[in-house]
Length: 280
Image (cartoon, rainbow, N blue to C red; front, side, top):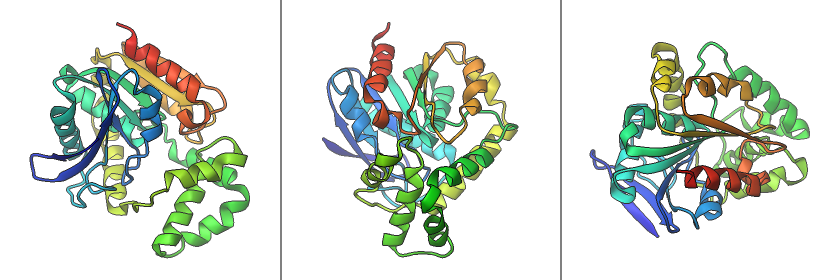
């Protein structure tokens, strides 16, 4: 069931909900992408009423800013208020993991469980991005020259989609199925909002350098589940400091899975989530 959510500044956000049980709001990655977490919803919709949404400026939501973390936290709160109720479980993937964590730090009384999937951690001094770039190029293999050629200039929508599919294929551990999984993510193709990506990426980096996120995490009493795929090309040690800082956290590493672990180990992913969500 789809719905429109209006934020306090009048922005229209696309949302969808399915399943029965306590609410679980999903936050997709990017930034600048759209919701691709339908497969996650289908894995747990017998345990939760799963709410998905396209973030501001992305996908089926209204294409307008501002693109700031505070604004996106407020947008998430509007989704929570309109569709989930007073308290909800949150799941964030990649950039969405940072957004969900930030929401829980700002509004812990409105979150009963936090699931942090394939995030990049909170340590500003141990940069993960050079390692990601190196791993990306290695995993692209024979596709690297085409990916580089497509990035030299602004392309057509078809070329932008092709480059995204090639890049996203590196997020899967099994080469034989990686392109097919990446193509599924890009269907339908709704276009990446590059302005949103740049603005939020830069602000998240500044925020980790200039604010004491670690101290705020130490004070967070909300139970947290950290889920990683061992074959993610973003180094998993980037999340170690977050795990140490959280007083009520457990971590599950799914062996052989990449950045989207529910695709390559759906049963392991479902088992970890359902155990966490149903434990008092």
